[in-house]
Image (cartoon, rainbow, N blue to C red; front, side, top):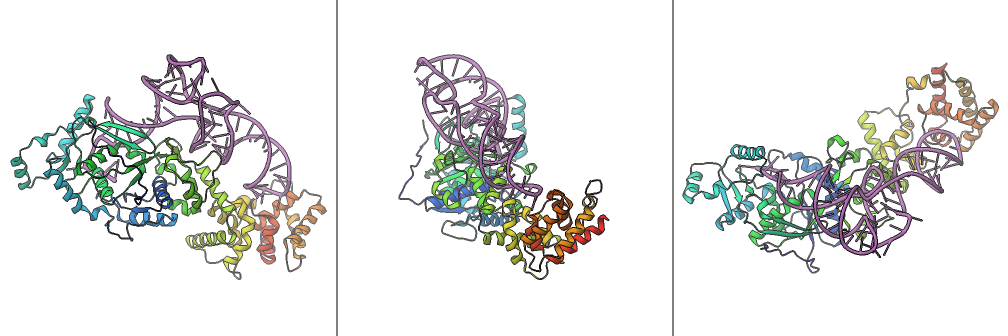
Length: 504
RNA sequence: GGCCUGUUCGUCUAGUGGUUAGGACAGUAGGUUUUCAACCUACCAACAGGAGUUCAAUUCUCCUACAGGCUGCCA
């Protein structure tokens, strides 16, 4: 016999309400960000409501500070919520720790209806029983010891102050059916579900219970969450049914795994959104990449603006296979966005990144004292826009414009065993560059430097190499002539002079 | 152990009962080039295995293998 399997059809007249429900045990990571994003996309697309709920019922693992971290990351991603912390509404509060009386009230109702019961078994006792079964190779299920207690026993126990949890009484041998948007029809027999605890002995609810109560009370119409919750769904449906709540639509998203196919964790490198912000990834690139993990539009398109995603996104085109996180592809997408970004926009981002960088390194004494940072960055952008994949890479590439250089040992001796007379080249470069008019245009700089190459009958490559190291303290730089122009005559000559001093 | 789920190039994916199985990232080679990129061209590379249904299966069914999830007074 089927338990009341009223899977709701999408109802067009009814407002769609989705939620993202993180537990504050850490920063917002890639996987949760994708879940949040898909919820947000669906809500935005359907002009529904995106609700944020904090599931902080585990006092042991809960970390208050991480709530703010999560909110901050969500805001940075632009995933603003219609209801939740900081945005109150009739369905609040949106922190489960503030809803304990609600959970308690509903659990009392269940007890009264004999759909739940007190359990006085101690965690230690249960642990022992479980262990024994596993050793025997048998499946473990709570033996319903406390279900057999008489009402007098229960009363006595409670009166004597014995701690108790509340267990849900799982109906016997019933089939639970539900349709998941991604995984299709799922059928589970209640025999494989034990009488799970809904209220802990500390009075706080457990996940499978509170999530069902809240989703129902908050009138959530579509539950979109990670695949790790697929096997929890039957338990939640049991709760819905016990109260005759409407069952929402379920969409489980395939997991995001690390490159080694294991669950994403710290050992896979940066997994928090915050880390990616630090590394200079841009909002739209991250969202674009996240969208591609478990979802696709067609065989050709990989680049989507956020507004394009809102138009094209469909729950039904989400696929089942867990996806491995590919840092390289994210990097490529980020580079793509940087290359195609408005210069003014890139300027703002780079300036912010640069200021953070300078502050973090405690650098006050800049090479560039006259020109405002922003103005200089504006000039630099065309030189680097096509050669960086992250903002951080950008800063690395252009820092010698701002920061005094001190030649590394490696570069100080770079030409020692090479057949080039670096000193001679620099001498000539110095001379010819000092002759360039005070306007110091890249074109003139190029002309004069090429002249050196001709005079010495040397490949221009060599000339460029020597000059580059002298002015940039690196074998890599933005295009040389323009770089020299922006650096300015004074600094260029000063650095060439300095480097000559070092190698001679 | 029990229950649930998944498996197309290295990675993300498209796709169909009959296709040279498509694209993107990465990789390789070449072009361009003052470095690094970007850009252009080409190349490499996949239907987990076995049975069944069928004229025909990567596509449908079953089994196996492998992987993941749940089985907590975690979420």
